[in-house]
Length: 455
Image (cartoon, rainbow, N blue to C red; front, side, top):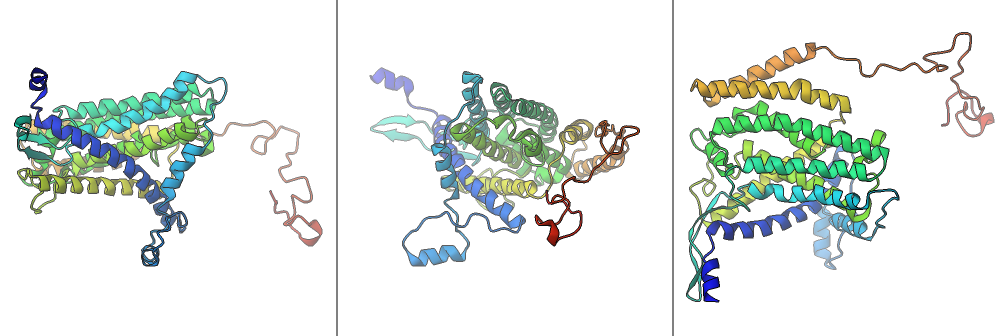
């Protein structure tokens, strides 16, 4: 027994911290998804001049608290709980003629990558761990550890690889449903996500070249060191392109053509119900959390806030780690709320417009930006001012050149013989309603006049 304990203990500080962070963050993400559903309902209501959920709540039996909650507009907090209960209690229906195994496997393949992608995020920087001794035996050795589930130096590659796996869940969900709408939705999702991974990877290379490292925590330290300018200031174009890619990867508006209701009903999850659909729903918000955390890491300085004590890389105490974690997660929530405002403000793009935006604009711009940054680094003239000038010049060039590119007429009207747009020679086309009730303004023709259709 002693030999087994000697072989296991002491465990390293990174393993000890990683297990704690993994347990905390996975539960925090799951709880945040429920809160985000409430946020999205309220934000969409305010934008559309509605009230939103204000009836589902908890009767605490305390008039003072009830009055306080009503004064701050906190009614409807139980909406997410009601949604969860609805998913659990709904009938779990699977249409006939579907692939039983793949139909159940697809939601799992969507939610698992979403719940493990954040593992390489350094939520709280570095923490110094003192040796932990229990009963005279050292169980945890002392040292420094990254406040993340896994301290991987090539964490960017892990995150991109995990994000790419979610394509399989959408594709299999569309294929296994034995539904043409679902199949087309799966094709749209896979084509869009694969396409937008290209500019996303190029924007990451821009940050890697600028920082000179591929370590996630080293990226944050590179934004703090020197001038202390976050990369969103040095590379605003890369930040804009990367954020658009995160919305497209998470199938968020205006890039949610995979589930375009007016064309494809619900997309690849049209035939899903109950908890199978809930897993797709959970995966979308979990992807949004992971993508926002990745953006904060690359462009918003991670846990750093300028001139705030306790949020610098040299602060490695427990209180500093908790403070850094709070700041990091606060920035993530801010980016998620921004995505919600974008969803309920900007109209959905057509599928051909979405793909054209990627291949005709975002990919050439990201390639040009990467080449320009590599040139600047090679000439050793890299500075914040030079990087800003490079971004501004490329943005102006794109605004001038891209409108002049040839545009194919993909919406050419197809003539339909006998229609009012393509009448048959020698035949008159009647486009007005034939019934008297349909030509009147009310269901009672004798009490109205005019030819306004009641349909």
